[in-house]
Length: 319
Image (spheres, rainbow, N blue to C red):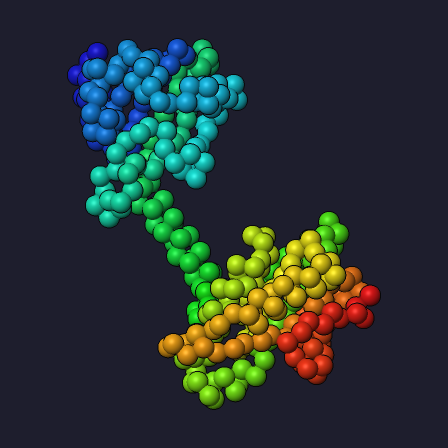
């Protein structure tokens, strides 16, 4: 090698060892031929100790069958392939030492697999380039978490911690779609506290709030896991009973009505008796949309109030 070639080789090696990305070259038997400074700093394995070793001996937790499928595919198509942290958070279990994302245990990685053709065109080596994307991944996950929390807040009633009107709209829409696609019948129950204004006027709004919270808890305890409840507004609530006809919903409503009537609601050691009126509507194709279904349950609710309150009424005219 002449002097120019040596200088060129020297700065190339220096550059490879200095780049902020991992670089590994493997032969066809997955034996390590090249191992740069990034790999040494993060694995604490010197290049001299890594070279000549099988990568599966160095990283014994590496999924051998998965990794070999990825590499062999690259060699077959003779084109590079990418593995993102969304697909697999990391291939090599390096610790995360970044101060900004210190709560993340491992380094998140994007990996490029490159085929290295020989002079004859055969693929005798492949190159792995490992990028540290911990900051990007952690920020993305934090954003997704924040968005999830924000979405939950937009669908949650702050007083009762059940769904609000927005959450109800989502669940009504899902129930309607399920009926159209699978013919799964659901029933919507609208309920309203009888004489709630009188309770507020007599005992104060904090007492009214306490009753709303206690009522939400009773309803949640009475429902199945796949049913849903929302505070529709004021003292009005809505329950979606999935896979439930209006007849079965009537039995549920009567049990709930009796349980509420027998409950001693309390506020600051004061016992307040509460009764509820209910309107029940089974989902219908003739109703046509979410609004029609909710209006049917609401009409049944007002009929229950006209008939004397503390009872449930089924809407009979949707079909």
